[in-house]
Length: 288
Image 1 (cartoon, rainbow, N blue to C red):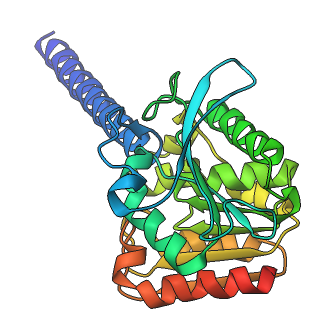
Image 2: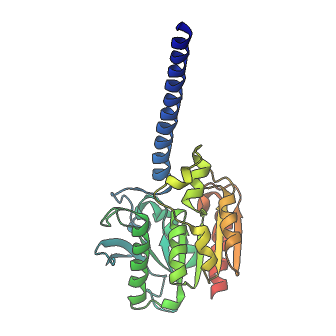
């Protein structure tokens, strides 16, 4: 009788330990999953601390509507000397997951100086002065609204629009490019999919299946019919360069890959300026 009671107690303790381990593992996963979603997907800020005016850029405040009734905010920066006339390329910028367009002013200014193209940068819903809350579907609607604004803007040639996507914005640009092919597309520090990033970052077998936002760029880019330039820093710890190479390999020709030596995720234009802007200048020239 005593042996039976002891055995039951041992089983009870083992079951309790196992349940505790599963619970601890589950809680750890949920915490990591929440951090992952915030880190790689949406981390907006509402206050715009910097504007192109602070760097001496001529620009126009733009507000435009999405198909589902939200007002988005952006800046149109005309190429120097032509005030947005149609004899120039227009690059539409799809920014990354953090902050807002104000955090891109330095790079925006340098791009304008080096490329001298029309530039249009905007905030997704929930970012900066744009209405709403961010979501994967929402970013796709926002991209379409931004493109529609440009197509309808006087002085912008619809056949001379180039997509410039950074990080999360690269996924948004690729999705739009399937439906509305651009003149060309630049992808900086892109990932293949959020699910794959989740599997890499979280030690949980089903991590990739539980993320709410998917951005399956690796599958979509195979359907893009436009010249593609991929730029990726070799020191990128946020999105490893292997992700950029994988996306590049899946893309159709013509395509170009540039490894940015010494560059991480957010400092590509600072850590490797000549390689970064040199590749962009060559891409712009090739498109012309």
